[in-house]
Image 1 (cartoon, rainbow, N blue to C red):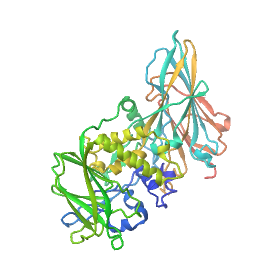
Image 2 (cartoon, rainbow, N blue to C red; image 1 turned 135 degrees about the vertical axis):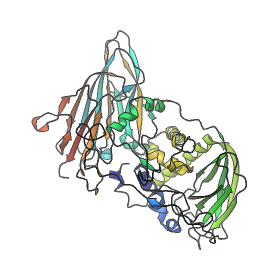
Image 3 (cartoon, helix red, strand yellow; image 1 turned 45 degrees about the horizontal axis):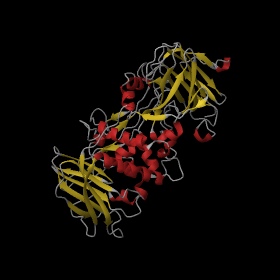
Image 4 (cartoon, one colour; image 1 turned 180 degrees about the vertical axis):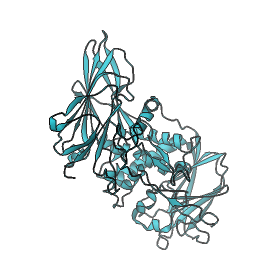
Length: 530
């Protein structure tokens, strides 16, 4: 879900909707710590800590010392001014929108068959109701991307076609393309590349970190992501194998005096050798460090707060040894605020990280579905195995299993990995077979609803209300194109405000040939009456 739809939901205290905010550049806190009691009292824990990235609030510290954490955030820069050409904006690339939806990408093939050529026609349809669900509003466009594949050899050619599209698992129900070969719909297998974005500092260059998510901001960044083929190779290749042994501590059978302490918290403390053990957690709300001592804490489940009752502490490497359990009146876990009556059962077991991740992914899928009962569910569209693989990739590429984890994931909180896997932008691929007879041709059509690039409402940008669309002519494709064209349909309710195509609807020019040497075209429109 992009910000245009998110803004309509921010007033709702709904964990599933709030988690969608994780896909945006957002405010994040510098350190993990226990959540303050006031957050526990908010209905369903609300927007407070979910949008801030989990264990990144203010806490008392294990020894009760002054808090060393600080808070801050970064908002998208004002995009009223255009960037230089080739940097994602400017005369050649169009407006550098605050939210860039990615270009329409060309059909590709796994193989590189000699003698096969392609002709392409891309059509944007701006009919009201093209928006998913047939809503009568002018947002985005229905895109049909059609190809004629010609076989100039005397032998039949069969290729594995790949149709790439930018988006997220959370949006998949709306944006997944359809595909047809010679007029017949085909069943396509779905592949997904890793998170396409990167990370940015909470406070900027003056105090650099990798706490905040960043997204691709323009055409040039998509070109850098896809042009060498490594991204596609990873998408089609085998996923990570996480068969390393782990020790698992599962916390259950919770009890606490909730009638007196509504934010009753339990903390587990132990010493670690950071060179010998890595700690991963699920279901915990806070963490403090004091030398080689760690303290992880969670609000004791009360059947009211919307938080997971499954709580795991996973030791990768050596075991943690002895630990101490204590109850506190709230998530601050301050010395002197210990309370009696907080208890749980702790079960120790040995497993593999693969098995633990599989269990947690299934648990998250179940919770996600329950929170969105009767509404669009990402897991109705994304295969579980694809989601689980993407979560493992995020953990290996940027988490504690990487050589240099990003600050955002360095503390091993699997809750963030599982939630953000759903909403992080990536490039996905439909894969299907196409047979082209000797000396003949095959027609391939792919269609999708394409969300636009835009500037946030209320940002003060002069580009508010505009919608941007891009077209990549050959990025990531091995096909030999002999012709490409573009067309517009149902323009009655939109006006073109910027473009590099050369459309002229007032003089009847709604279709035209493209320059095969040009890598990228853009189109900007404004719905009439807005």
